[in-house]
Image (cartoon, rainbow, N blue to C red; front, top):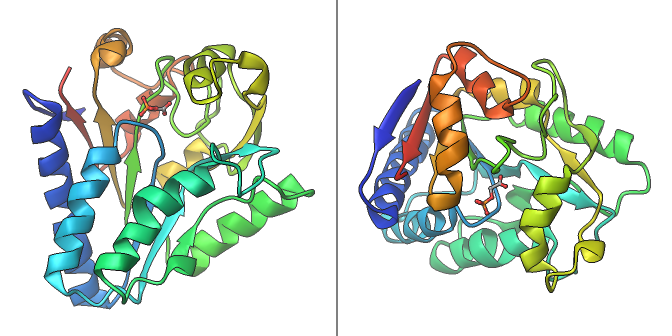
Length: 246
Ligand code: PGA
């Protein structure tokens, strides 16, 4: 797999942000629009900060920039401070709108964790991605168990956007955001499927931090995808790159 190695998180974030910026600039210049897939979590946070600065000073017209997030807890009220909706509002959509008014906050899309009909919600989300023209570039983090989005181990290559059970390791790892109380971490999530993610024209996965070392070592040894490490499906993507500092 194509991997770019960096000596620091800052250097990685700068390079990833510049790459994403150039792709958005090119997409908007050539076809007038761009569809960016976003991940939540600590890994891409700094990349987003830098990207937003670049988009702010660029004066690009972002009215046809759409973003689609990978996942959301379920059930989860959008106003909950730990919802991915709130995270994206605070770290991406709102600050981007502040520096470049042409980006409209409603063009930031995320699965609705409040939906009483999660299956329908997931089908509609797939349609929305399709109608937007498909994802041009998908940003990914990686879970300590190798998950991408909430596609936990045993997720299939052709899986689509769906409701899933969140793995215990993932809930344990996320409880830091829920007052260290595992009982408060939702047991289910809605997530783009592996098949949905693999349809993105380009994928950029960020592997950063000491706690990702072990899973990254395992991933690097694989020659073909293995359902026990969902991130390994990137091996069959034509245009996937890993930005790593581990
Ligand atoms: P992190 O999460 O970026 O906060 O480590 C990644 C993930 O669980 O997918």
